[in-house]
Length: 205
Image (cartoon, rainbow, N blue to C red):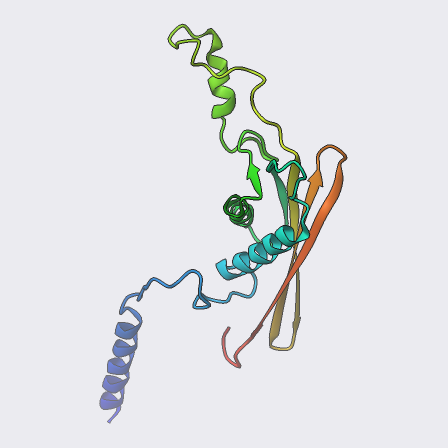
Protein backbone atom coordinates (compact mmCIF):
# COMPACT_ATOMS: atom_id res chain seq x y z
CA UNK A 1 0.00 0.00 0.00
CA UNK A 2 2.82 2.37 0.94
CA UNK A 3 4.57 1.64 -2.36
CA UNK A 4 1.38 2.48 -4.27
CA UNK A 5 1.04 5.80 -2.45
CA UNK A 6 4.68 6.67 -3.15
CA UNK A 7 4.21 5.74 -6.82
CA UNK A 8 1.11 7.91 -7.12
CA UNK A 9 2.90 10.83 -5.48
CA UNK A 10 5.84 10.40 -7.85
CA UNK A 11 3.53 10.36 -10.89
CA UNK A 12 1.67 13.45 -9.65
CA UNK A 13 4.94 15.31 -9.02
CA UNK A 14 6.19 14.39 -12.49
CA UNK A 15 2.99 15.69 -14.08
CA UNK A 16 3.31 18.99 -12.18
CA UNK A 17 6.92 19.39 -13.31
CA UNK A 18 6.05 18.56 -16.92
CA UNK A 19 3.16 21.02 -16.84
CA UNK A 20 5.41 23.76 -15.48
CA UNK A 21 8.03 23.09 -18.15
CA UNK A 22 5.56 23.24 -20.98
CA UNK A 23 7.08 26.48 -22.28
CA UNK A 24 6.00 30.09 -22.31
CA UNK A 25 3.16 31.02 -24.63
CA UNK A 26 3.86 34.37 -26.26
CA UNK A 27 1.55 36.40 -28.45
CA UNK A 28 1.44 39.86 -29.92
CA UNK A 29 -1.13 42.31 -28.60
CA UNK A 30 -2.49 45.61 -29.86
CA UNK A 31 -0.32 48.29 -28.25
CA UNK A 32 -3.19 50.78 -28.48
CA UNK A 33 -5.65 48.53 -26.61
CA UNK A 34 -6.12 47.69 -22.93
CA UNK A 35 -4.82 44.14 -23.37
CA UNK A 36 -1.44 44.69 -21.72
CA UNK A 37 -0.40 43.65 -18.26
CA UNK A 38 -1.29 46.12 -15.51
CA UNK A 39 1.71 46.33 -13.23
CA UNK A 40 1.45 47.92 -9.81
CA UNK A 41 4.93 49.13 -8.98
CA UNK A 42 6.12 50.38 -12.36
CA UNK A 43 4.87 52.25 -15.40
CA UNK A 44 3.62 50.12 -18.28
CA UNK A 45 2.99 51.09 -21.90
CA UNK A 46 -0.64 52.03 -21.31
CA UNK A 47 0.39 54.48 -18.57
CA UNK A 48 2.78 56.16 -21.04
CA UNK A 49 -0.03 56.41 -23.58
CA UNK A 50 -2.41 57.96 -21.06
CA UNK A 51 0.15 60.51 -19.85
CA UNK A 52 1.26 61.48 -23.36
CA UNK A 53 -2.28 61.73 -24.73
CA UNK A 54 -3.55 63.91 -21.88
CA UNK A 55 -0.44 66.07 -22.02
CA UNK A 56 -0.52 66.69 -25.77
CA UNK A 57 -4.28 67.33 -25.82
CA UNK A 58 -3.91 69.88 -23.03
CA UNK A 59 -0.98 71.57 -24.78
CA UNK A 60 -2.72 71.82 -28.15
CA UNK A 61 -5.97 73.06 -26.61
CA UNK A 62 -4.16 75.73 -24.55
CA UNK A 63 -3.34 77.80 -27.65
CA UNK A 64 0.18 78.66 -26.46
CA UNK A 65 1.64 77.28 -29.70
CA UNK A 66 -0.37 79.66 -31.88
CA UNK A 67 1.54 82.58 -33.37
CA UNK A 68 0.13 85.71 -34.98
CA UNK A 69 2.75 85.58 -37.75
CA UNK A 70 1.86 81.99 -38.65
CA UNK A 71 5.39 80.68 -38.00
CA UNK A 72 5.65 77.35 -36.26
CA UNK A 73 7.09 77.31 -32.77
CA UNK A 74 10.44 75.55 -32.36
CA UNK A 75 10.63 73.34 -29.27
CA UNK A 76 13.55 71.65 -27.60
CA UNK A 77 13.10 68.64 -25.34
CA UNK A 78 14.68 69.36 -21.99
CA UNK A 79 14.90 66.84 -19.15
CA UNK A 80 12.12 64.80 -17.58
CA UNK A 81 13.30 63.96 -14.08
CA UNK A 82 12.64 60.44 -12.86
CA UNK A 83 11.70 60.69 -9.17
CA UNK A 84 10.21 57.20 -8.98
CA UNK A 85 11.63 54.09 -7.34
CA UNK A 86 12.00 52.43 -10.73
CA UNK A 87 14.51 52.67 -13.55
CA UNK A 88 12.45 54.06 -16.40
CA UNK A 89 13.23 55.63 -19.76
CA UNK A 90 11.44 58.98 -19.79
CA UNK A 91 12.09 59.29 -23.53
CA UNK A 92 9.03 57.13 -24.07
CA UNK A 93 6.96 60.09 -22.88
CA UNK A 94 8.88 62.88 -24.63
CA UNK A 95 9.13 61.02 -27.94
CA UNK A 96 5.39 60.42 -27.97
CA UNK A 97 4.78 64.14 -27.35
CA UNK A 98 7.34 65.14 -30.00
CA UNK A 99 5.70 62.89 -32.57
CA UNK A 100 2.21 64.22 -31.78
CA UNK A 101 3.41 67.83 -32.03
CA UNK A 102 4.93 67.25 -35.44
CA UNK A 103 1.77 65.58 -36.69
CA UNK A 104 -0.37 68.44 -35.35
CA UNK A 105 1.46 70.95 -37.56
CA UNK A 106 1.59 73.39 -34.62
CA UNK A 107 5.29 73.13 -33.86
CA UNK A 108 8.66 71.76 -34.91
CA UNK A 109 11.18 70.19 -32.56
CA UNK A 110 14.93 70.58 -32.77
CA UNK A 111 17.27 67.62 -32.43
CA UNK A 112 20.38 69.82 -32.46
CA UNK A 113 20.05 70.65 -28.75
CA UNK A 114 18.38 69.02 -25.77
CA UNK A 115 18.43 68.79 -22.00
CA UNK A 116 20.67 65.72 -22.16
CA UNK A 117 22.62 66.87 -25.18
CA UNK A 118 21.60 66.79 -28.85
CA UNK A 119 19.59 63.83 -30.12
CA UNK A 120 21.46 64.18 -33.39
CA UNK A 121 25.02 65.56 -33.35
CA UNK A 122 25.10 65.86 -37.14
CA UNK A 123 24.07 69.53 -37.17
CA UNK A 124 27.31 70.43 -35.38
CA UNK A 125 29.46 67.77 -37.02
CA UNK A 126 28.75 68.91 -40.57
CA UNK A 127 29.83 72.46 -39.70
CA UNK A 128 33.17 71.12 -38.55
CA UNK A 129 33.91 70.20 -42.16
CA UNK A 130 34.68 73.81 -43.09
CA UNK A 131 38.42 73.07 -42.97
CA UNK A 132 38.26 69.60 -44.48
CA UNK A 133 39.59 69.64 -48.06
CA UNK A 134 37.84 66.34 -48.76
CA UNK A 135 34.55 68.22 -49.05
CA UNK A 136 33.38 70.80 -51.54
CA UNK A 137 33.27 73.84 -49.27
CA UNK A 138 30.31 75.34 -51.12
CA UNK A 139 28.21 72.38 -49.90
CA UNK A 140 29.28 72.55 -46.27
CA UNK A 141 26.57 73.90 -43.95
CA UNK A 142 27.51 77.31 -42.65
CA UNK A 143 27.71 78.46 -39.06
CA UNK A 144 24.90 80.74 -37.92
CA UNK A 145 22.16 79.01 -39.91
CA UNK A 146 20.75 76.57 -37.32
CA UNK A 147 17.47 77.75 -35.76
CA UNK A 148 17.39 78.14 -31.99
CA UNK A 149 14.33 76.93 -30.06
CA UNK A 150 11.57 79.23 -28.82
CA UNK A 151 10.38 76.93 -26.03
CA UNK A 152 11.53 74.07 -23.87
CA UNK A 153 9.48 71.06 -22.72
CA UNK A 154 10.45 69.60 -19.34
CA UNK A 155 8.86 67.53 -16.61
CA UNK A 156 9.09 65.19 -13.66
CA UNK A 157 7.59 61.82 -12.73
CA UNK A 158 6.95 61.17 -9.04
CA UNK A 159 5.86 57.93 -7.40
CA UNK A 160 4.30 57.24 -4.02
CA UNK A 161 3.57 53.78 -2.65
CA UNK A 162 1.32 52.60 0.16
CA UNK A 163 -0.08 49.34 1.48
CA UNK A 164 -2.88 48.31 3.81
CA UNK A 165 -3.38 44.70 4.70
CA UNK A 166 -3.23 42.69 1.48
CA UNK A 167 -3.69 45.74 -0.76
CA UNK A 168 -0.69 47.51 -2.32
CA UNK A 169 -1.04 50.80 -4.18
CA UNK A 170 1.18 52.93 -6.41
CA UNK A 171 0.48 56.53 -7.35
CA UNK A 172 2.30 58.13 -10.29
CA UNK A 173 2.31 61.89 -10.83
CA UNK A 174 3.40 63.17 -14.25
CA UNK A 175 4.20 66.89 -14.34
CA UNK A 176 4.92 68.60 -17.68
CA UNK A 177 5.81 72.24 -18.34
CA UNK A 178 6.54 74.41 -21.36
CA UNK A 179 8.95 77.30 -20.81
CA UNK A 180 9.24 80.42 -22.97
CA UNK A 181 13.00 80.68 -23.51
CA UNK A 182 12.82 84.46 -24.05
CA UNK A 183 11.39 85.13 -20.61
CA UNK A 184 12.12 81.93 -18.67
CA UNK A 185 8.45 81.78 -17.69
CA UNK A 186 6.35 78.61 -17.75
CA UNK A 187 3.51 79.31 -20.17
CA UNK A 188 1.84 75.90 -19.90
CA UNK A 189 1.76 73.18 -17.27
CA UNK A 190 -0.16 69.92 -16.95
CA UNK A 191 -0.42 67.19 -14.34
CA UNK A 192 -1.48 63.62 -15.07
CA UNK A 193 -2.24 61.28 -12.18
CA UNK A 194 -2.34 57.48 -12.42
CA UNK A 195 -3.12 55.25 -9.42
CA UNK A 196 -3.02 51.44 -9.42
CA UNK A 197 -3.84 48.79 -6.81
CA UNK A 198 -3.05 45.12 -6.41
CA UNK A 199 -4.54 42.73 -3.87
CA UNK A 200 -2.26 40.05 -2.46
CA UNK A 201 -3.76 36.56 -2.55
CA UNK A 202 -4.20 34.63 0.67
CA UNK A 203 -1.26 32.38 -0.24
CA UNK A 204 1.86 33.57 -2.06
CA UNK A 205 2.06 36.83 -3.98
